[in-house]
Amino acid sequence: MSKRKPKYEVNILKRFADELAHPRLGEKIDYAYRISKALEAIQLAILGGDPMVIDNSISALFALIPESWYDEEFSEDISNARVTYEEETQSIWCGIPWGNSYVETKENTEKFLVLLACINLLDRLDMLARKEYREVVGGVPFGQQNVLFEKSEGEEEEEE
Image (tube, rainbow, N blue to C red; front, side, top):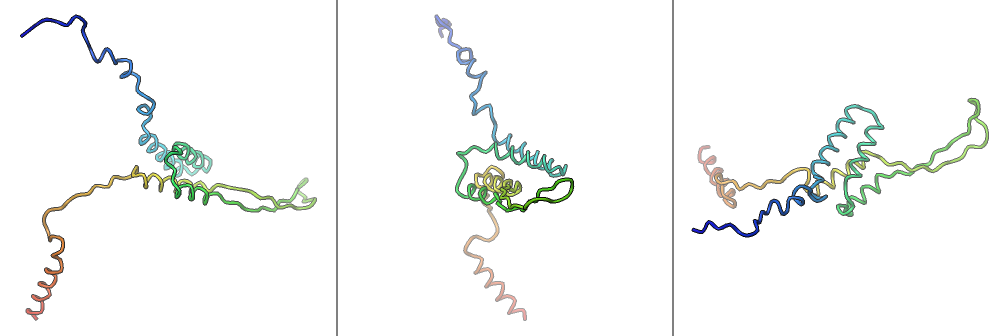
């Protein structure tokens, strides 16, 4: 066995140390963690009851979702969250209404519908829950339930 050392020592970790120490942007941002923290912040805001904090936390969750994740159903849900209504306003001077009243068209976004649209999108992307399929061995094999049911009915009739 030769104990000769190579002329130039090749150390893979030293060679790529800079790349290993500084991960790419995709590796730095853990979206699942960020989204879970945003959902947690929304829950805390709802428990706190401050409407401004609730609106801001829902807006933060919406801002976390990249446009590449949008699908048609999500876009439709967001458009349904926008509500347009007309409001009649009257100018008031020193507590006394004066002048002509006018109708103003306003647009509002229902934040809880935006939250529901975001949660539905995350559910469609399988980011909220994992579906585990398990094969269960034992019990009644598939397709033999009717046979066993007919046997059990026959036994009950004999007992009567």
